[in-house]
Image (cartoon, rainbow, N blue to C red):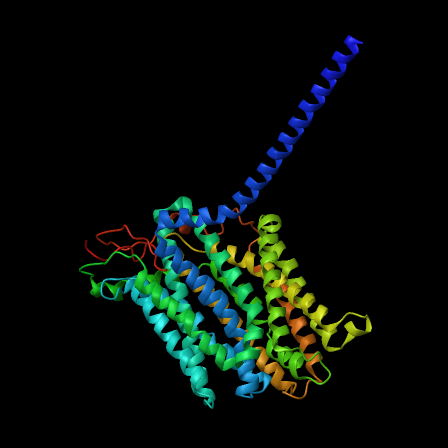
Length: 512
C-alpha cells in the first residue's frame, strides 16, 4: 500500500505540474496574441513617426493634407456635389453637364506648366511654399464664392469650379516636387513616400465618397462647396508650415533659356518613333472610350423608369467603386505587372469594353428580370468598371515612365500625363456630343441604351491600334540606346537640388 500511495502522490504531482504548464502556455499564447495586436496597431504609428523624423513632420503633414484631404476627401465631395449642382441648381442638360465637367478639368492638362513654374521660378526665394499658399487661397476663394451665391450665372460658376480645379492641380504638382526632392535625398524611403501618397489618397476618397451623399442631402451642393473651403485652408497652412530652405541671388534671367532648352529636349524626344507611337495610342485609347457618365447619373436619379437613387446611395456607390479601383491596383501589383504591355493592354481594353455592357443591362432593366435588385447591380457595375479601369490605367502609367529619357524624366512624365488628360477631355466632350445627338435630356432617356452600346463598341476599337505599343515587358528598356545613354543637362553652378518637373534640366540656377 505504501508503494501505491507514493505512485498516486507522484501522479497527482505530475498532473498538477502539467496543469500549471498548460496554464502558463495559455498565458504565453494570450500574451503573444496581444503583442501581435498591439504591434499591428502600433506599426502604422511608428511608420509615420519614422517618416516624420527622417523627412521632417511638415513634409508628412503636407502629403496627408494634399493627397488625403484636398484630393481624396475634397475630390470626392467635389465630384458628387458638382453633379447635383449642375442638375438641381443650374438645371442643365446631361450633355451640357458633360461638356462643363471637361472644361473644369483643363487645369490638369496644363499640369507641366505648374511644374515648370514651381521648379524654375522661385518667389521670394522659395520654390514650394508660395505655390502652396497661392493654391490654398485660390481654392478657398473659389469655393467660398460658389457657396455664397445662390443664383450664379453658369459662366461664373464654371470659372469658379475651374479655379478650384486649378488650385488642387497646383498643390498636387508642388507636393509631387517635394516628394521627388526627398526621394533624391532619401532614396531608401522613396517607396515609403509613394505608399504614403497612395494610402492618404485612397483613405481620403473612401471616407469622402461615404459621406458625400449624406452631406449633399443635408447641406445641398452649395453647402458642400462651403465645406470644401476647409481643405483649401489647410493647403494654405501647409505653405506656412513647410520646412524649405531659401534660395538667394536667384538668376531669373536664366529662366527663359532653361524653359526653351526643356521644350527642345521634349520635342526631340517626341520625334522618336519609339515614343510618339505609344503616346498616340495612349491618347486614342482614352479619347475613343467616350464618357457618358452624366447621362447615366441623370437616368439613375431622375428617370421615372429608373432606380431613382437617393443622394446618400449615389455616395455609397462611389465609395464602393473606389474600393474596386484599389483592388485593381493590388491585382496589377501582385499578379499582372510582369506581363508584356501589348498582351496586358489587349485584355484590359477588351474587358473595359465588355464591362460597359453592364450599364446596358441596367438601363434595359434586364437585371430585374433576373431578380437582381437595382442597388446591388449598380454597386457591382461601378466596382467592376473601376477595377477594370484601374487595370487598364496601371500599365499605361508604367509605359509612360519607360518613355522618359534621362535628364528630363519629371518634365516628360508630366507631359505624358497631360496627353492622357487631353484624351480624357476628348472622351468627356465626345460623350456630351453623343448624348446631344441622341437627344438624351433631363426627362428623355429612351435612346440612352443606344449611346451605351456605341460607347462600348468604341471602347474596343483601340484594340486595332495595339501595334503602336511595344511588345516588351516592364522590365526591359523601350528607348533607343543612344537616347537612354544620353543625359540632357544645363550648365549651372550647382546641382544639388533635383526637382520633379525639370529634374536635371533645371538643377540649381542659384548661387549659394
